Image (tube, rainbow, N blue to C red; front, side):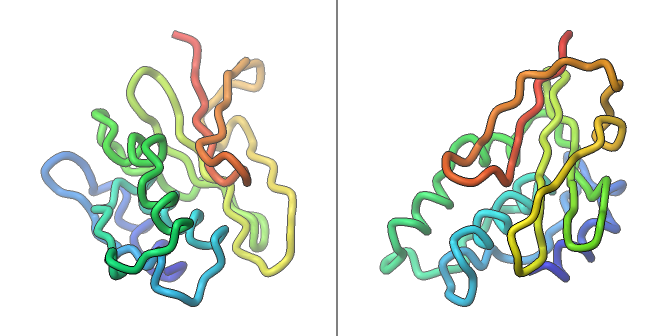
Length: 155
């Protein structure tokens, strides 16, 4: 999943309405990842405007898998009318920041810890396209762990 995200990131400038990049089917619910890893996977695919094709057997998916795949807030980022693919904007070891504009002058941000241990991630305002003096209203699109933020910019 992570290598697919990295490969897809290279093609971000070429994506848009009429031509979306497809890093592959979602692996959410197929086993082998933690709930947090599945949330990260779904968040990156949503930010990249990738087709959100469910790859697990929906007849036997867990409650957690259903909650991830039906997160309307994250799906809204994927389906945003602006249609700009987000991409990696900052990297510090295993800690990454991915971001992309969405309609209404907003920015969607993914704080992605790709390492095995808990870590803090700091997103530089400039890396996500904000002035240092910007005041924002941020919303966590996941209710438990902050993997995905929506930043609302003043109009």
